[in-house]
Picture 1 (cartoon, rainbow, N blue to C red):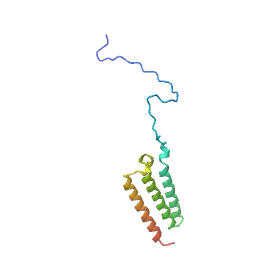
Picture 2 (cartoon, rainbow, N blue to C red):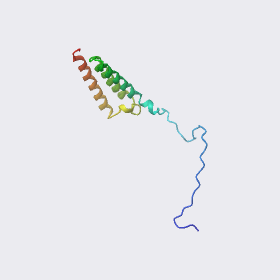
Picture 3 (spheres, rainbow, N blue to C red):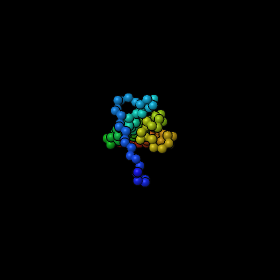
Picture 4 (cartoon, rainbow, N blue to C red):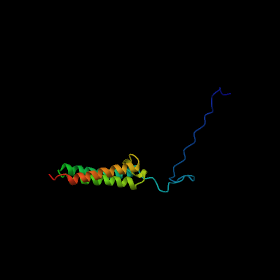
Length: 120
């Protein structure tokens, strides 16, 4: 007779060998989920354009640099507007329309700044 509170130990089932096939009941996502690094590609494209604009500003081109940075902001707004939330990566900060309105506003202000800045 087993002591009170003692439970019978069950033997763990042996793992099934991996044959590379999906189990019969498993469903595959038809759209597929992209790899994690692929989701961040729009973000890295925006960062690369932003970095190029910063280098141009550092080279004393005060009209072209802000224009390139404004292009990076418009690129980010376009990605945020047209890509689904699961594929936009780190560009999704707030609600879609808040992000798009903020990015477009900053881009327009930078274009105006580049336009009115005196050429040095």
